[in-house]
Structures are given as C-alpha cells and as structure tokens.
Figure 1 (cartoon, helix red, strand yellow):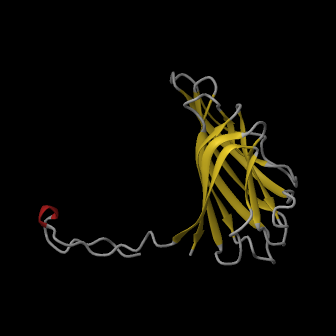
Figure 2: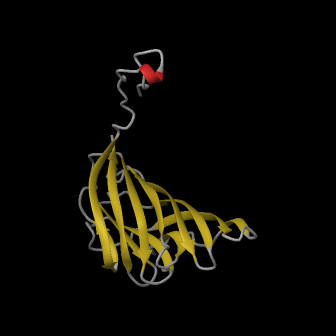
Length: 199
C-alpha cells in the first residue's frame, strides 16, 4: 500500500498530492434495497472471482423488534439450509449510563441449518434499527469449510445499544453461492445491503 506524500514541505503550501492505492482492493458488486421485504436474497455475484466477500448492511429497520439474521445456500438460493457452527457474544450499554454488559449469549449454533442471528433485537422505533458488516471467506472453495465473521450494532428496546460479534463456519465443501438476510420475525422495512469483492 502506498502512502500519501505531499510534494511540498508545508501542507498549506501543497500544490500536489501523491497517489494512494490502499482503497483499491474493494470492488463493489451489488446493492440490495429492502422495502417491507420478508428477506433480502443475494443469488448472483458470489463465485470464484474473489476469495473474500464483504456484505455491508446499512440502516436495517425491522417492521417489528426482532433479531437480524443470515443464512447460506449451496444451490443458488433454492434452499437456505447449510449446516453451521458458530459463536456469539455482545456488548451493551444503555442511554442512562447505568447498565452495561459484555457476555457470551446462546445465540450460537452447533451443526444447525437454522439462520444465524447477527444482531440482537433491532428496535422497530422510527429512529432505530441497526448496521454492520459480514465477511464470507473463499465461498467457492470445494475443499474446505466456509468461514464467516460479522460485527453488527443495533438499538434495542429500553434504550440499549448492542454490539454483536459472530464468527463461524458453513460446514460444507460445496460452494456457497447465495446468502439470505432476514429478521427472525416480521419484515425488513428498509435498509440496504452492499456486496463487495476483495481483490
């Protein structure tokens, strides 16, 4: 990665700036926009082109307070039922500043085909919801299992904010070629999910 270099001694006198190539490794692939959607299914663009994919979910607002979840497919989205083993912990803090926690939660999975919670109880209040990102590693590899990690922050009832940390693997040597995002109940009223490939 190159470093930005000023070609003059003083910043106030700079007339030219050198190059910066550090952001060139993310390649935008697609944007999915939720609008009272039961789920957001990304069924194209996940292939052997990249060894890593990043999903950025922004301003996810549910129709009713619920966990924000993910599931994976090895058949192009016909079924979202890949077996997963995961871990989950979170930190929380309330607006009053008198209640905090950092704890393991039993929202992890052990050889389960269920959807994996990424964010706990995103609030449906008009000014609430959640955002975050998920990395999916080497999904087209047919030798190894498919690892993923996620960080998601969300506003919950009682004026709490949670930061949720998830990691795990899809226990299959089949290629993962579709990803589904959904709420544990109700719809995703609004929000976007951008997918990037990492060179």
